[in-house]
Image (cartoon, rainbow over all chains, first blue to last red):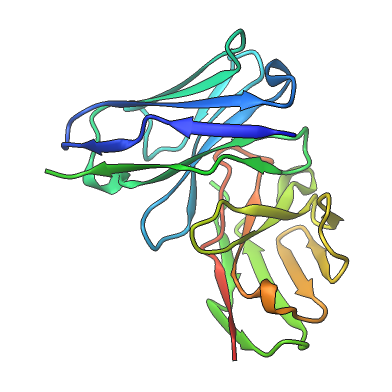
Length: 118
Length: 108
């Protein structure tokens, strides 16, 4: 069974930093692209970053470019999201999601809440 | 960036009725990489349909997807009580991988 478990969320002041982790199990982590998707309170889904299976290719939404960095450690089956220069509008539940070779994203974590507030 | 526009914003129907949800893309979707997700309060999104037509594992056959190019439809043939939720379309063929703003399917 595929499992994705996010952690690292919490409250942070504007301008601060936070690192999220997503630990994967139940599949060969190093074979799949991964993504981070966020959802602000009461709002829709927003894709923010993606990373290829080896980590060599990364993709960013304009809203986080230059502030957020995605990386992975395939030896630890873990996906990371380093968030710097956080803003109030970054407040959201952050989900990691597993790609499936053109078949959509069938597996998601439960999400971790990030709150940016003074 | 491919912008996805969903309509209607809210759909009010009764159990047993047929639901038709629309998703229009600002440009053609790459490689037919168009998906539909269902989300209930407090839960992660659940993949229903990928590649425009293909049902994900375990999804009942009352859910079906159709369309091509820039116009796509999710149809729920006969609504069950557990189908009332928010539905999102997504294109995952071209970065940035965008979502529609969602359609809320509510009980009439």
